[in-house]
Image 1: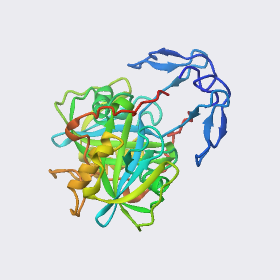
Image 2: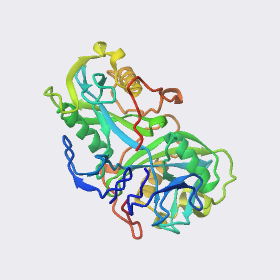
Image 3: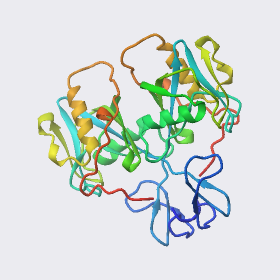
Image 4: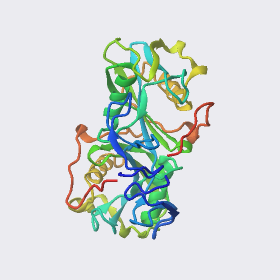
Length: 190
Length: 190
């Protein structure tokens, strides 16, 4: 961020009065341009004993496997975002069952809200951001070819809850850990 | 957002190839400037039978009561953000106990992650964004003078869990409802 989105002046990096950290501040119009973490919404979608995975058609981590998930959009709820992502990435119609986890990935300024969901039917197919989508048994999960550390986390967690009904206890990062970067998983600066 | 933060050209509002909604797109450098909901982190902080409330010193809803909460910052986890807000607004040192609720307020593009916390001691005082802070009994909550609908929601929810120990079940918006706007609670466009 180099220019003011409100007036096009060159921004300064400085601490506004009363603030405790540096921000992008416009010396012309005075606007402070805050930057904040983004929310990823997604879901572990099951149909009986199988779960839905998507192979990514786009960077980062193209060709690796993930659950349907993506950036939450303006004007929607987190739950609506998770439904939208399941449709966009796998043409999957789902019903949410509870919030499995809230993961913070500080290095890339993300908070991930990951739900458990039931597929309403087996009719899934690759959306534009997926190379292929599959309904796999839990023993068929390609652990070595998952796209992101948090996909690993959430699948292990969902697996541990297999067959257990009743209310879901939402978890945070396992052990409070931060996930490390993976090859090809670059953070693009805004 | 009128000018490109990367190159200062006047932005266009149009649908990028392969996208399904309009974005701010720069016709000069080609950058798509996505806008996403923001995360608010906060906590219901208790010490024995009392809970911590802060009277806001800043708009929106100046003079009304809230829990310590605010926008999550870059580079922190959600949990660290909740601790930071308790310190900034009430000089409170707290220990998180679980995630009470994830509320989506689509109208103002917010997701609120609200924790339950224990105050480590009674030494609280107003930070720069609070007119005053108080440790109140549950029967002393100023229900008519709360700053936001979600403060109402979370206090009712925390109150319903009073004295119940054990794992916390994280809830979403009550009944899936969206809160309405309150007087003076304006949404400022970026």
